[in-house]
Amino acid sequence: MARRPLRVGVGDLVRHPGTRHEVERSVPAGGLGSLVVGASRVDPGVDVEVDLVLESQPGTVVASGTVATRWHGECRRCLGEVVGELRAELREVFGDESEGDPDDGDFYALEGDEVDLEPLVRDAVLLNLPVAPLCGDDCRGPVPDAFVPAGDDDPDGGSDDPSRDPRWAALDDLDFD
Ligand SMILES: [Zn+2]
Image (cartoon, rainbow, N blue to C red; front, side, top):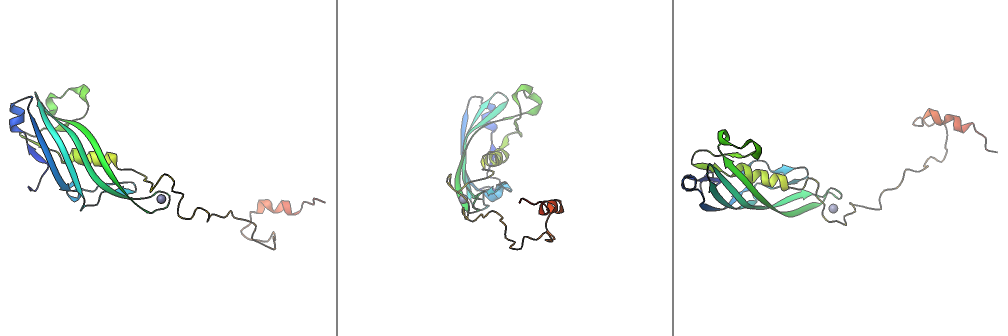
């Protein structure tokens, strides 16, 4: 495997508009930089499966298909480990920016006879990682019944409690009898 497995030669495609080229790669996530969003991440040793079709049109190359991988995260309620599958559909355009259609929004740079799929694969993963994952819809947290409201735990109830808000001191003088 080449050092840059997601760099793909497209010379023939560009010279023959309307032709297609399939790209199937399995690349370690570590080669894509840091894939972390909120409380979820793709670990560097996990493979990212790239299954794309490159299709040339005059002046552009369109990449469409799927990017899939496995992510790990921390449940936002119980902080337990969560593992999930990510599958992103994408359709992105590579083009020469000087000839771009300004209404067409962003596209990736067509670099001579090559396209670099790495940035769009990385973007597809980052956009589809859950920011705040849950281990399950019914997760209620680590100890759902542990929360006890702060009660009146001072048997003396004295007004000399230094932590007591002095504004409540006036209540001590009220006589309800
Ligand atoms: Zn949970």
